[in-house]
Length: 341
Image 1 (cartoon, rainbow, N blue to C red):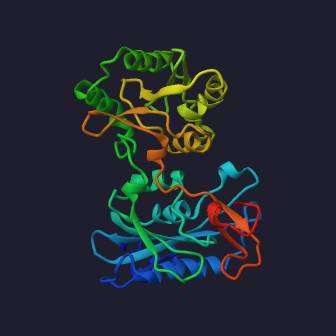
Image 2: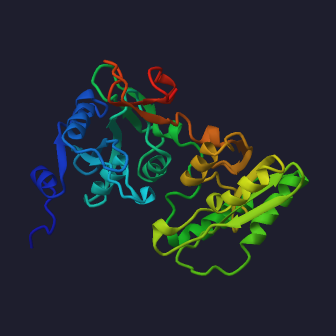
Image 3: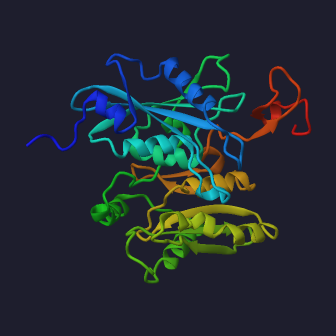
């Protein structure tokens, strides 16, 4: 019987939309970044943001050593929360490629006049399939400057402690981790973790997702607020624990300063806020609130949302009649010719 799936280079391109590369191709080659620019220029900007992002993920098939790249572009809806970025769009193509394969590099081009990094949601999803040392190659809107390269691990520190653990063993893995992990010594920290764990004692309304999370925040006046993650079978409708506590956090912060945040699972393991939670904290004025987390070695560490979303960019559209910036998305602080500065 013949092979059900033909993984030849021709089929990879025609069936999977995957483009072949020479075996010795540098994964960070500027030619691949230029492919992203060409793809971007061929596309109509999304009607909701007017901002195009294209990406190319370079990968190698483990069995043959052959190299390919998959491209993707951002797609948007009126409800911007359901939109998909270019990096995740490219990653979706790899999902159909017969494995095993290894991601070697990720290239990005956009309508921004300066370099932009992947957003936090993309950083988190890419971290599931790529290693922390995977290079991210960022190109400007115009090919006037060399690309900038940074590693995925630098962009997404404190990734999920159990990110690559299968569902059927993740609870046992978490229990084992909790037994050897360091736990807080100070009373305020212990009480905050206890409050988060107590919130998780109620039976879950569904058991499809075995891991559960709660976020607890301590204020200077010793008040504590806590909320559990809201899980939905429709993945995109789930709300993580930090975002669940967001409304309370905003109100209480007008009365007293938040001084410590934890996100605990049901076994007392302290996770850094996930992508949506960390960027919400960063963008809403809570970027310097201390966050207590477990490191992969089980030791405790303190971080902040600002440290969890390094090189996070805010851009705005500039229509000023400038040869350099006109009609491009620019960093807000760079736009000296209009009211955006």
